[in-house]
Length: 241
Image (cartoon, rainbow, N blue to C red; front, side):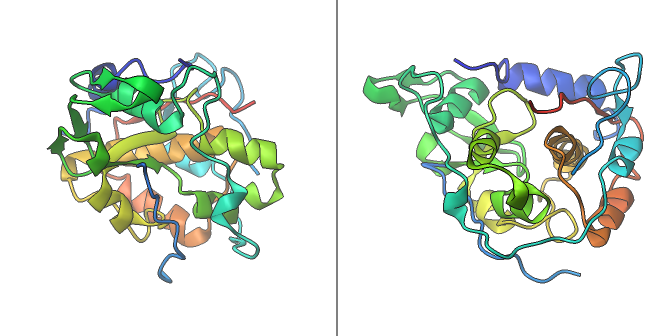
């Protein structure tokens, strides 16, 4: 299994430790977002301050380049996703479900999953049927395209769509919340659970920085405003190869 999350429980422990300010076959809804209204990596240690201690959320947001979005030419098929990169029989969707399970599912032929339990952090809903979960690209494919992926090679877009090497990139959530989010950025959509606010902002910011994606002015302004209650939140990330 590719380097990924150490499991949902360990990810939750990390979140609790660093984000103290905050007490699918997936169909990611990449339909055009309702109108609402390349990256410089940090100096020093990857993903943080020179001492490797991470960036405050506010500082991390300011490191996202600001640029106009470019939607022209976007097609969801431009991002090949749910591949079996390590040839272990489990495509990306199943890899995420296995990694994030609170209660491990049973794994059958061709990586079919049964049983198990998950917690969708967007809405604090407990799920015991994997079919009711979508795998959300933290920064949706269409938003990634708008923010710089239109200039990537097909290989890099595939790597983005199947990023198992970062805790922030993909998350198992209820289909309802994933499809409510569609391809909207935080200026137009935030998770319904108040407890998810700081975690989501950290995840979004880390993903944009990891992949060198930009933000438009409306998005950046929203991120800065939304992050005000998250003064203790820390962003750590590794720039994608």
